[in-house]
Image (cartoon, rainbow, N blue to C red; front, side):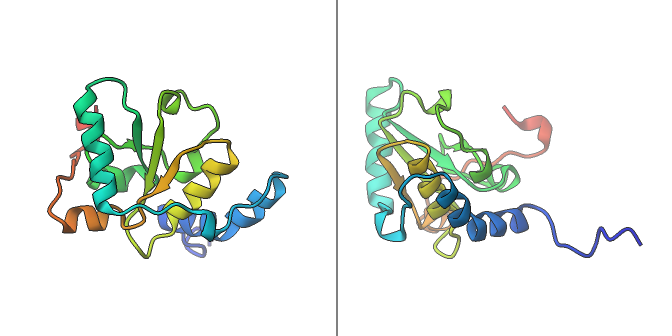
Amino acid sequence: MDGSNLVPCGSAMRNLLLVVLWPFFAGCMGSAQTTDRDITVIEIEQLSAMIEGREKWKKKSPTVIIDVRSVSEYNRGHIPGALSIPVAELRANDPRLAEAHNLVVYGSGLMDYLSAAAFKKMISLGYQNVYDFRSGAWMWQRQGREMVTFGAAGDLP
């Protein structure tokens, strides 16, 4: 018996561990801890306005939308223009985020706390103007908004 089936693994387990262990690791970084009361949650209308502002200017986006779910979940459907950066891969000084004025993180939906964990991590990494679209991909799709999907791995850009 190799023990490989004794411990559940995959993106769901990794996400659960991140949410459970994140407060411990954030506390070890020596900075003030961000609480749930510090999280700036936005609704779908506010996100839509940010996206429309980005479309209007046709320049480098002042708003960057970040899907913090696993890459496979991102590939199954994400908000148009969103970057895939799973929570575990969020880093300080990411060049993809350098020009952003607003950073919007989202996960699967209301019962998924990945976006809250991502918000807290980004604040601890020194990012500003971070927003949590807590309703996530679920609400975006439920409201009839466009979702971008990728098929086989060969279809990825």
